[in-house]
Image (cartoon, rainbow, N blue to C red; front, side, top):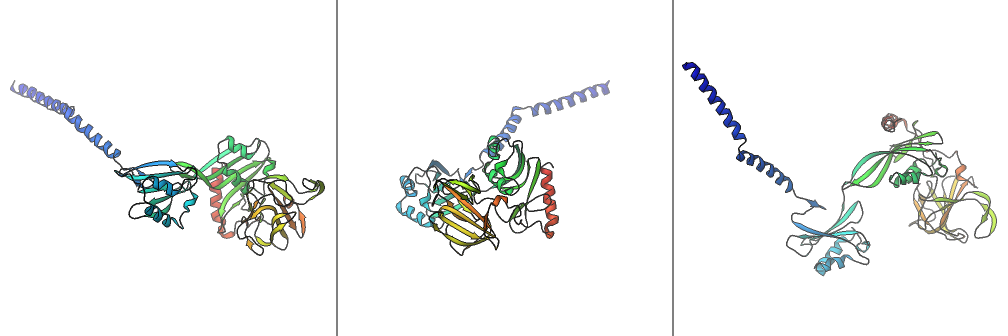
Length: 414
C-alpha cells in the first residue's frame, strides 16, 4: 500500500514538473524576450547605412534636379550659398577632368548637405550613363570623374524576320544597338537589304547593367542566322589581333574590306550605267554607290591604307581617296568636313573615321558616294566576291577555339 502511494505521488510530481516547464515556455515574459530579439534583429537591419554615390545618407540630405537651359556650375552653386572663392577653386580643379561648359540641359545633378547645414558639401553631375562627376566643396576641395560599377551579363535572344531585322528587334523590344552589330558580323555573308520573310536569328550577347538597369550592349559572343534556308554561324574569338568572328569551320567571316563606309545608312543609288543625274539633268554613268544618311554621320575607311587625296573638288565636294594596296583604291565623296588629322600621306586603319556625311559638290542631299577601284578600274564593290578574307583560326589557337565554339553552339541549340 505504501509502495502504491509512493508511485502515485511520484507520478503526480513528475507531471507537475513538466506542466510547470510547459507553462514557463508559454510565459508572456518568455514571448516578450523572443519578440525583443526579433525587433533587435529588425532594428539592426533597418539601421544599416544607405549610400548614394558613395555618400552615407545618415549624415547627409540631398536634392536632385535637372540642368536648365543656360544654367552653369556657378549658377547652381551660388544659388545655394557657395562662395565665389570655392566655386573658382572647384572650377580650377575640374581642368583636365571635365569641361564645366559641357553641362547639358536635361541631365541630372545632385547636391548633398551635411545634416544641419544649408550650404552643399558635394556637387554631383550625371555626365553619362557610365560615370558621374563628383566635386567636394568643403575645406578640401576636389573634383573627380567616377566610373559606375558595371555588371556584365550574357543573354540569348531569338526571333523571326517578317520585313527587316530592325523591325523584328523593335517588335520584340530587343536592344536596337544589336542591329548594327549583327550587320557588322554578317556584312559579307548576308545582304540585309535582301532579307527574306521567315529568316530567323539567335544571338548571344553581353549586356551592361548599372544599378540593376540595362544601360547598353557590350558585344555579340555568338550568333546563328537562317537566311533563305541557309544557316550562318558566327563565333567571336580573339587571336591576339582583336575580337573577330568565325564560322563553325574556323573560317573568318570578315573580308579585308568593310561592306559599307557607314554604320547607319540606306543605299539610295547603286553602281550602274546610264543613271539620270538629279543635278545635271542628264544621263551619265554612276560608277559608285550612294549611301544616304543624316548629315554628320561618321564615314569610315573600309580597309587599311594610305590617303592619296583629301581635298575639295567642284563636283565631288570634300572627298578622300585611299590606296589600300597595288590592286584596290577607294574614294568617299560629298563630305561635310574631314575628320581631325585627315590629310594626304596619312595612314589609316579599317574603321577609322575619315570624315562626315554632307552634301558638298554636286549633291541634292546628305549622302556619301563610295567609289571602289580594282586595278585602276571602277567596279561595283558588291560584285567583288573574291576579295581577300581575314585570317582563319591559327593552328596555335585551334584547341581554344574549338572549346569556345562548342560552348556557344550548344547555347545556340545546335
